[in-house]
Image (tube, rainbow, N blue to C red; front, side, top):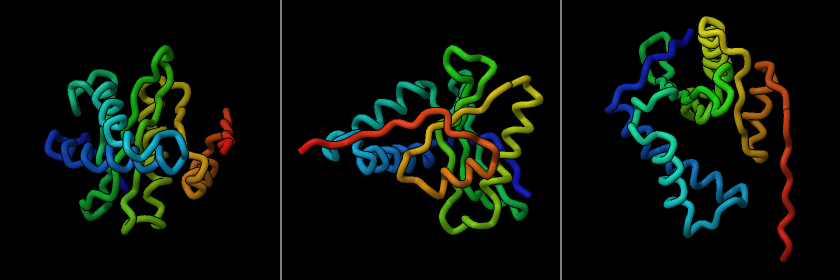
Length: 155
């Protein structure tokens, strides 16, 4: 079984470095941003969303910790803008060496338990279309595709 542990400031700095780079790479891969601008845009988005760092109001950052106390991933969610009865998952990852052990599914179940205790009615997230493994996980956890955006690059 896993636990969600509130992320400390020291963990947040490590998380932020990794997350900014990963998000920039995903936006490039999805065709949303050019590679030469991606890191700067990613930094700006993170700074805009988390101006106070790990202690930003209405944003919740957790380490996902397994039964032996190892950090196996992280989860960042917040009260959804304009929908205080919803959570929006901004970032969620199980580190590669810990994948395929059920930790992701367990973390989503823990978040759902937490949401119930706080009278949250809905959990929402965005997933990149090319991330088929994550899409399958979310479907297995009971999420449905509410919107699908498609693009076609004209050359």
